[in-house]
Image (cartoon, rainbow, N blue to C red; front, side):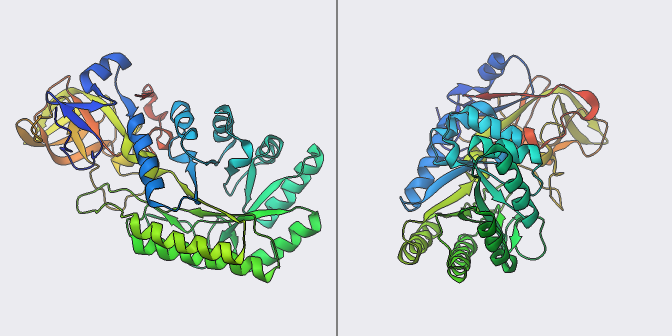
Length: 414
């Protein structure tokens, strides 16, 4: 068995007798166990290893939260709940998934710019922390809390006047639907005081999917400075400070893996400053994609091999309706291929069988249904298994599964 990575984007996977191993099981055997394709498979050993990796490089006093929106599969969330210090949710559905794990509600936070009154009531009744994103939401939460007779736990989500440079998704800086503009936070602090609600802290999230350690470190430093300044100006206690990690994973050729050492060193300095100026403040980082993204694969079966004007197409039983991100329609401006392989034709020596340039497409009646475009893969036939790597985050739950009425894929944790 080769334990050496044999394909870009599959760092934690191995190959045995020419087949990809997922959770220690060969892909063919796993497909038989699942019973049908397509499916997502998540490797629990890789999930555990990634959390350990993060903890080894970040300060011990820093609390680590898992953002459920990255992958809300209940079994995976249950596994992650045993590894992290907090869970972050963005809907009532995710809230139920988090509470079903038995996790302490006080360490569950609820974010999102459009919480309904029903969601606010559910969160307050459960005792979770609300990341308030506007003055209006604070007023609505206060009314819900009064009706329930429960003191709400409220953190103010701050929209900073800076963004995470080089991030795939910019969540802060400029005009944003997320959070309270930093210059309006003092007004919201006075609003909380007038309502008799004790502030639980600040949440500052400026961007995600960054592979630049220096940019992430700068964002963390500026977030800490902003939180301390806001608390200082208001003479306000600061029980908690919640930072978006911003950690990204490589998807495309030429991208380099994120280096955590400089980020951890910088966070250690940030924590030291917080402890000097605001002793007892709990500092947390929230991560989703980085914790789970590389531990998952999407598997589809070739149902037809065809040649059109010299171009080979592998038509599979899965596509953009299951994995929108891999098709390029989840934010790519210029479409790029996710790392992929013919999972049952991986050579044990680190190569693959005879190779050819093909396009992997799905069964939908749209030219957008592409999983790999003109990509060099092992030669495949009907029945072979196409694997798309880097599929542990923003896969199934971020895809239009109802489109054209095909069955939804299964999910397994192995």
